[in-house]
Image (tube, rainbow, N blue to C red):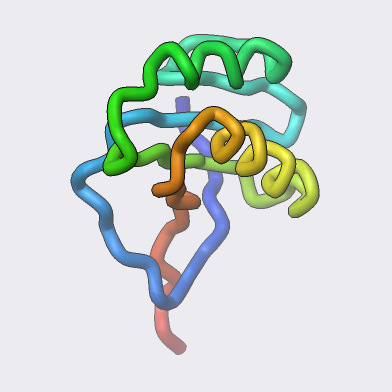
Length: 94
């Protein structure tokens, strides 16, 4: 599913992401490309936890309020993950 990511001039491509969460402006939430309710996310993440090196990549549509992103990151951290990356797209230099 296409998602319009926020831009970053310092974006770095990460090739070792293992878990993907996608959050759309209309409230849809996906874990590993499957729909999920936010109240189920912490339990599912805890079941998938393997080690502290595991990475969670969050792709959030750029219109999603920052507080919702922070709330999502808190759920990920509460599930035991320390390595969280927010997906961005590279901005063209002017």
